[in-house]
Length: 291
Ligand code: A3P
Image 1 (cartoon, rainbow, N blue to C red):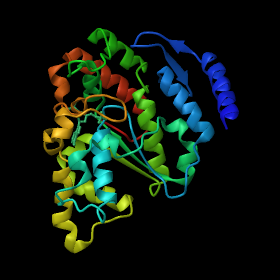
Image 2: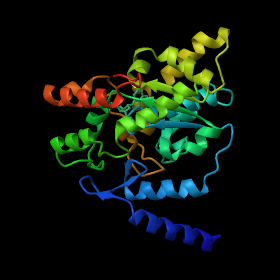
Image 3: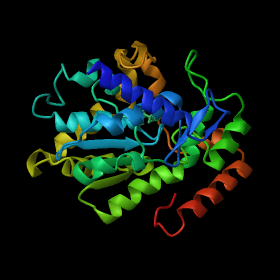
């Protein structure tokens, strides 16, 4: 009811105002259960924690921002809706909708997901941290929110773990450990490996989503999914080159930049790369996860 809703909002406001906060990005971030979140995301997480009740067969797609969320959403949509929407069809929803407008979005890093994880399953997509940082440092579209004022500042913040949804290593490690402990509940994917071998990963994803490709359809159908969801194909569609997201008003083209692995070499000095590599190596040491 409205009264209950107002009460939860008031409680959340007072909990949020008690959280550690820090300035430096485009607005002050709050530290909630070890992760730096913007004020609106902090609020969403709290509302979800109170009001979202996951079901046994729920599947969550979890990504640190800029790790390939758009691609993973497109693939998961194409795979799970294959019987209603054949991928070769001229009217496939991905031809007229941005992937973000076809999949609901919840705002939660791993530590906030525990209830879902005990019930449902999670696909996580990670990416070489240097490339993730580059996407954040290089605003590529006129009018897109400028994430940072100065590259060196953004770099230092990222290395400290003070980044949107950061520290990135904590984000990765939560899902990584879960996928190692309970393989049937968590699939941990890597953007660079998917770019290198898309067909193998699409098959793996379909199996995890419990809609595996049959042997005889396997070859052609898997390749059609890969092609439909490819960077070149999605980027070239009018909806993605000219459209605006219904969800957040962002231009859809802002989700597509180069789609390349290793673009960090064009934006980072060798010293910066070495420093970040050392930090990531140290933070992930002993986990078995490497970049
Ligand atoms: P680059 O900036 O390196 O090009 P997210 O979707 O999580 O915001 O991630 C954005 C990154 O994924 C961008 O990387 C974007 O170009 C890339 N991307 C978007 N769609 C893709 C697709 N279909 N295949 C591969 N990469 C894609």
